Every structure is written in C-alpha cells, then in structure tokens.
Image 1 (tube, rainbow over the protein chains, first blue to last red):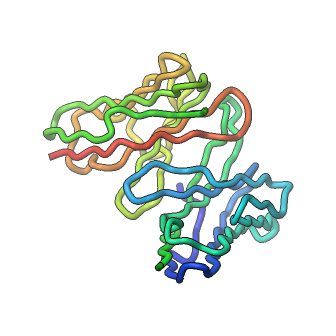
Image 2: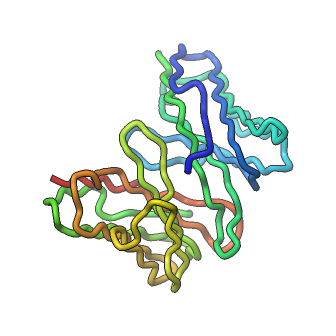
Length: 115
Length: 115
C-alpha cells in the first residue's frame, strides 16, 4: 500500500524560483529517498536520507527529514526549466532477506518550471 | 556504472496473449530485483520482490499466477504477464539492488498496451 502522501500534487513556478515539495509517511523507516521522473521515463535517484539524519544537500537540492512528524521536504533552489518533472518520495525499509530497501512510493508532485 | 535495462521498451499485444518483460543489471550483480507498476499520472506500486534463485514475494493484491516472475541469474529477472487483458495495460518498471546497501537502480520502464 502507498503510505507516502505528497503535497502539493502540482506546483508551477518561474525559472529561478525555489520549489518545495513535502512528503509524509505513516510507518517507521530506515531511509527516505527522492526520485525524479520525466514523462514516460524511468526514475532518476536524487538523494537518500537515513532515518538518523535530519538534513542533506546535493547541489541545488536540500532534503530534510523529521522522523517525529514523519515528514520530509525536498527543496530545489534556483529552478530551471529542465527541472520540470514528477518528483516522488519513497520510504525504505530493509528487508530481512533482500538487499536494497523495499520502497513505498508517495503519490508524487508534478513540478512545472516556466522559462 | 549501475545501469539497468529493460526489454522491450514498449509492447502492444492482443488480449489473451502472454508478454515477457526482461530486466537486466548490466554492470553489477543484483541479489534482489523489484517490479513496479505505474498507471498514468499515478505513483509506482510495488508488485513483487525477487531474490536470485528463490520464489518471488508478491505484494497483497497482486496475482502471482497472473504475473510470473523469474530471477534466474544475478543479472536477469523476467516478468511475464499471462493472458493479458486491457486492464493490464500499464507502465512496468523494474529495479535492481546490489548485494549491499540501500540503493536501487531503476530500469527505463516498459509500456504495455493490451488491445
């Protein structure tokens, strides 16, 4: 079942502005990951934050995690038209007999960056 | 590195036929592979988790006799949609996890259209 809820469902901004997307989840996690998906394509891994971390940066991306509130946010600074895509959070729980985390995806945010 | 391929990238078939989708890890060995399904403008739903050499673990509500998964080697998993019907039309995405760590690497997806 999908446990991640993301808001907003859709976000439209101008190039150069910052974009913030939020994700909430329900159960305990080992990690939370953010992915980007261009229309009709596969997923691109953006960043992983572990349950014992509170903030992580990667280039123009900043991710926060608040395990007490079971929420995470993804901030994209100085957005570009090429950032237009769907963004998904996914919560990871380590399986007993599997490698990699068993991921549960949120509903996604459709970001449109207008030139 | 860490490239996952899927074949075919798209397939159109008649109702009642079976369709096989291949997922390959090209430059690493994948102890675990995951299969997801995505409907238009929706999120990814985990269908099943497979470990090399053992039976796949299916998510609740996913028919194992309908969606046959074989993970015969450390670099190849296949998903066969048996007796496909129009409601099986969807975007199927696989991911592969190396032996250690939390990261999954996603394939580009296979779009299935059942007429």
